[in-house]
Amino acid sequence: MGKPEFKNDTIAIVGVGLIGGSLGLAFKRVGIGNRIVGISRSETLERAVEQGAIDTGFVYEDLESGIQDANFIFLCTPISRILELLPRCLATAKPGCIVTDVGSTKRAVVDTAHEAGRSDIAFIGGHPMAGSEWKGVDAADPFLFQNAIYVLTPSPGCDPSLIDRLAAVTSRIGAHVVQMEPEKHDRVAAAISHLPQMMATALVGLVGGLNEKDGLSLKLAAGGFRDMTRIASSPYEMWRDICRTNATPIRETIDAYISVLTVLRGRIEDEALADDFSYANEVRDRIPRDSKGFLYPLHELMLVVEDKPGVIAEVATSLSDAGINIKDIEVLKVREGEGGSLRLGFGASDEKERAGQIMTALGYTVLSR
Ligand code: NAP
Image (cartoon, rainbow, N blue to C red; front, side):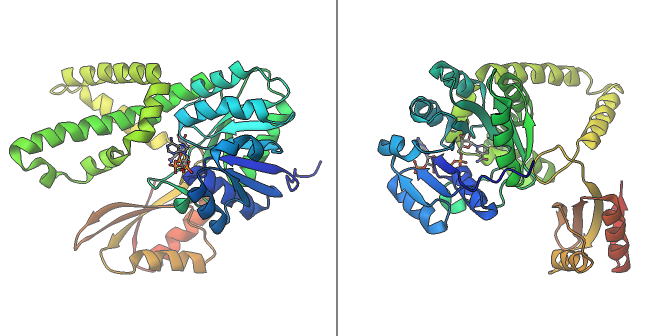
């Protein structure tokens, strides 16, 4: 059987923001869909057509006209709006349509879809684990889903061939599809995404309070504090919906974290703390790395670099001249006037070896694990 083409499908995107607009651009890039219809506010639709993310648009009041011929409907608004609009989409979708969403929590959305009780269409929850701190269609990126994990949470009894169809569409735009139950998704997301957000918010709040008194804490805040708290800049609007639709797993994960912290608190002057550090070191090293999501292992090297203009350009150009693709790059430490280190990730071990030789020949210090 050949690759499914999706050339004749009509795709509706409800809420053409960062994720919805990026889906539209990605579908266009790979030639999926003969017509991409956006449903949003009129100003958004105008921008989305200009950018080429959609072919045509309908405002929310005309949602039914916009989605009635669709083979795929992607709901890409904030979660609270997905919950409002989903029953209307499910009531109008034509038989055989695949309805999905991109919300960051899954159980509430899947339960709402289940209540609609339509057996002639498939609702398959989705969560592309890619994004950015930017919002709206102007920030849309046709490559956003490349190498990203895309979680699908099909409803029980969903026709496997329809799950395969949605998985094929998301794979075609570069994502790695992973299937799981909505409850499992939400529990995992609570631990790896929602708890870190709460920790960052709490930690910055704590240090902010100390800074009010000493006027020094923020001035002295260095790399570790900044690394751990980057996400404290996230906007509350998105998190309100995540917290309200995943409250129990988030509370349970916070409780589990408090218990772990309490154990650490008791070991602060105890050699047993060494075991906690070595276990954490070992687990951290075991996390497979990928530029967007932690699932597919990369082959990595570290470069110690001087702080001078053009260093990253020199590294990137020399590797590209040798036909080596850098899959992931991260600036790990920058010491002003001294230099820092770059972590480079490659798709294969021979690329890593060759990259190491090229960098050594150029005079860089190369570290490899
Ligand atoms: P976004 O850029 O703000 O886009 C959401 C779009 O939804 C807006 O452009 C807006 O278009 C529409 N919308 C409808 N009702 C809205 C309301 N009440 N408030 C705000 N916007 C409304 O956000 P996004 O990052 O694409 O997120 C969309 C969904 O993707 C969310 O459910 C989020 O959980 C999920 N998600 C986000 C990320 C991420 O990192 N950003 C990653 C994975 C999943 P109109 O103004 O035209 O209505």
